Image (cartoon, rainbow, N blue to C red):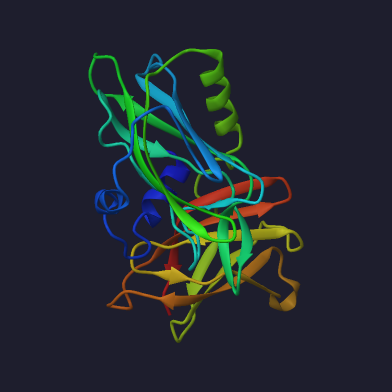
Length: 276
């Protein structure tokens, strides 16, 4: 399983939400096709034929119109995290979805995390039978301009080796953060009062480093705030407020930390938080 796929699973239930099937039902039926358009956004689903290992790769293209935005898997208090359901696909299993590096933007007094330009989400699945596979995706995403609207669609894609599909999948995968193994030296510690976390990254640039953090179900974290390390210690450090936590409060916590610095990005998908 890819690192960002683990990140996606880690934060899928970050905030309490109605099941996707219920939300889709409330929004009304959708017509299945490989493309979908609504004010502010156009969607396209593509997939490639199985490779020698039986893997099917594809991408969900989200073409945002100028001035529109959509959200990352941990969107902040104002956004709607993407809900992607591939369970109705045929002859495919074990879907993993990956996400490119997001950015922060203001929505009123709140800070959200997502994308202000067109974005593509690559995915990978495994052939479950020798039958011809078919990708079916039921989705619910939020797109916003002056107001935010939910976008519901049911998309299908028959795997094809066409140049357009190959180019779409290649471009989507090229935009992903660098996959790396667990990063030695990265630490996350809870404050003695349990109200904040400090994340220390000794190999990060103290000048242009930034992080995006996602927590598992029941936890809600604020936006990272850079802090100055005592004694001019190398690297960068960030404090993050714990806005909501499950009970019992002392349960172990693993977070996903996405570090950006200049044009590079690295992900630690399961950094254990040390408790006081």
